[in-house]
Image (cartoon, rainbow, N blue to C red; front, side):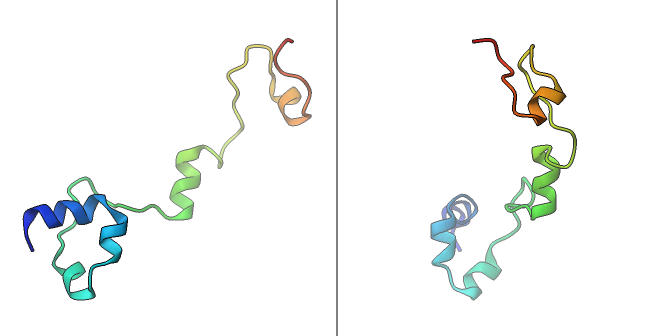
Length: 73
């Protein structure tokens, strides 16, 4: 497989989906690491596993969870 095809397979999921199993086996691992994350990894990255944090200066965790107005009108 040509170098340009390997790079395209790394970057383009639509192109990667058109490859046969034999062609996919020829593609080396991406140098940056995993291309896809599982659900547990996504939760950890998004912060959904921890407390909810806001950036509005007048919004507290209490007002955020009770759906009160956090920002002044």
